[in-house]
Image (cartoon, rainbow, N blue to C red; front, side):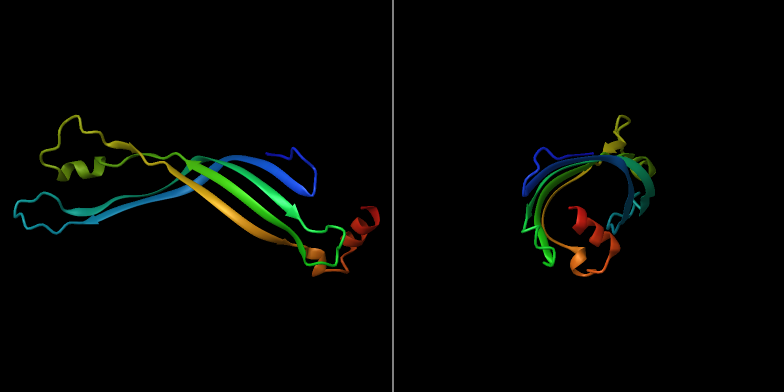
Length: 145
């Protein structure tokens, strides 16, 4: 969903998205121990794909160059800030418990490993009609707009 509150040469917009995100968690360890009776063996503890819900929020502005000059290659400068969040909850320690000789009985095995990202981007937007001036769609846009 996008919302465009202002229609000017400086086009500001808000963007929100909800969807499914494929994620893979791979956890492996190698144990080198000098303790002769060490119960830790190491190995692959988790190697699974899953589909997780994700959200993305974005705010941006487009600083348009002279839109009337259609023969120009440059269309606008776009500046955006986005935040993405992917919650992930996994039973991580369950495969490791047989290797822990003194594990307390109330040891939590499920953990939240949520992923999030903040991204800032700046892009130069190019006009495709500059590359394809003979496009029939482009001629229709020029006549009506």
